[in-house]
Length: 230
Ligand code: AMP
Image 1 (cartoon, rainbow, N blue to C red):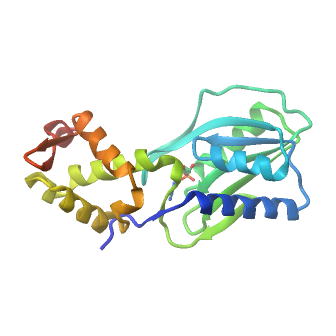
Image 2: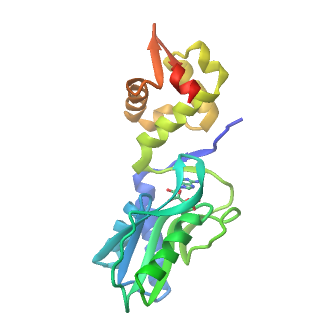
Image 3: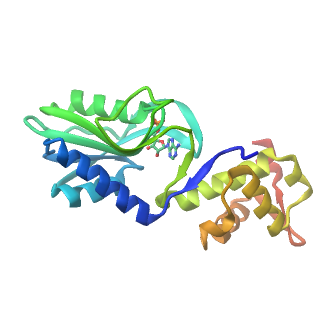
């Protein structure tokens, strides 16, 4: 059975979803004066929404909750906080996905208190309704079964963390894995194939070897001692 249900999202889907989200915002009759991207997941959706809605002012707030792919930190925090005067402005805050909802809820609260806008509304491409404590004002897709959405802007980061987890936690990796064995374990863990990652696959494994997390000997990959200890 797959341990972490994962779906690879393509750039084409992102564009389609962003346009779909834009249409919903437009249909509500509300128009933002300013868009704020939640760093880092909201960057691309926010830029696409600026294009669709014709918004020039694009800022960013760094609200961070998930420190590792598919593993949440305890609490969301605002990093590198700064303040602007947003009095009289309608602000739309955007993230890629609302999972627990902590990230977007905190970003909204921060902007509302620190920037003093007329109104803050929230949007996300996806909303995981059964687990989220927070419902964005606008979303394009309602997700009913929890899935890790592997967005195109975190291919390398997610892939490295996904591989690292196999080397750390799967007993079978201790005896060494050929590239083929690693590929098949990966499919077993995540339900997606290495072929979907294109050239990122090789890049990720090379980086893990370079960082000393994985050792490569006689055609096999092993978890390093440091990785197993850490
Ligand atoms: P949360 O605070 O739980 O709503 O998490 C929101 C942030 O974590 C988003 O900006 C995403 O970048 C990331 N994230 C959380 N859950 C997922 C998921 N299921 N798939 C992809 N990214 C996620």
